[in-house]
Image (cartoon, rainbow, N blue to C red; front, top):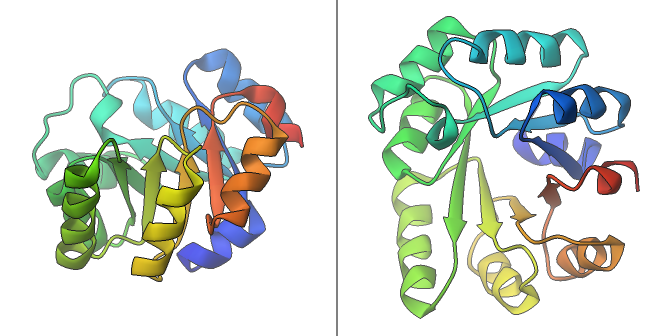
Amino acid sequence: MKALELLEASPVIAAVKDDEGLKRSFQSECQVVFILYGNICTMADIVRQIKEQGKTAVVHADLMTGLSQKEIAVDFIRQNTLADGIISTKPLLVKRAAELGLLAIQRTFIIDSMAMNTTKKQIDAFRPDLIEVMPGIMPRVLKEIRAYTKIPIIAGGLIADKKDILAAFDAGADAISTTKEELWFV
């Protein structure tokens, strides 16, 4: 399934930060689960549970305890789990994921104009499958990124309610990711 088709099928992404959230994500209609916790010893089991539910499992490589910030970490995920993709703020990890056939999601924090310019350069240089823009409650920034690229955009971070979700979609986001469990069911 292509990245945009995946987001169209599941515009709200369950971002789980513990085992309780993982179990709750199984009850939701969210078809994509971002794994924001765990370590190299537990990662394969967390991914396996998600896959058993028929959902897409995406590991946040930067948040996995025990992984380095080098490309070999992505090789480890590919060889030792059934993960469908990775999220990272590290462009080289995203690039390696794409090379290995994993869904490659670039997470970027837009805090000022320098960060915006860096993000645009990274989009051009590394061509991720998806871009996660944080915080996701900045419609003007989402519109600027949307105008710059056709790469699907996920708005994440500080999404507090349904109004934030609708504003992100209106600004051009293709999906939102949130750890706020009640929003997995809207």
